[in-house]
Structure formats: C-alpha cells, structure tokens
Image (cartoon, rainbow, N blue to C red):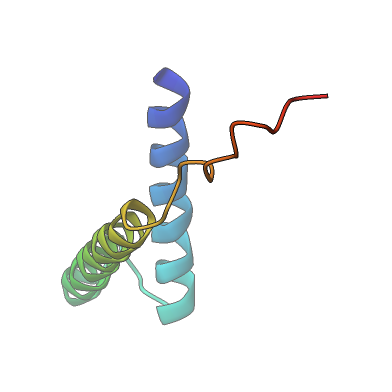
Length: 76
C-alpha cells in the first residue's frame, strides 16, 4: 500500500512540474500564476478521476470468467 501511495505522489508531482513548465508559470513571484496553476492542476486531477471512473466502468462490464468447457474435455 505504501508503494501505491508513493507512486501516486510522484505521479502528481511530475504532473505539476509538467503543467508548470508547459505554461511557463512563475510560482514564486506571481500570484496570478499560482491561481492559474491551481486551476490547471485541479482540472487535470479531476480529468484523471473521470478517466479512471470510465475505465473502471468499462472493465467491470467485461466478461472475466473463462468459458464453460464440455464435461468430456480434460486437462492434459
């Protein structure tokens, strides 16, 4: 469980870095840049949540059980 949490934190930090560099935000000096960054970052996190919800919904609708075999079939 700790590895999953560490992976999630690293993933979010890398995403924040990419958003900052892509949009050329100056987070130290400009309060407007900080607000824009927070809007972009929170929007990105919400999109990740929506995508995960969609993927989970599609995966749960899949047929995961093996197909029935005839009674005469045997494992070799």
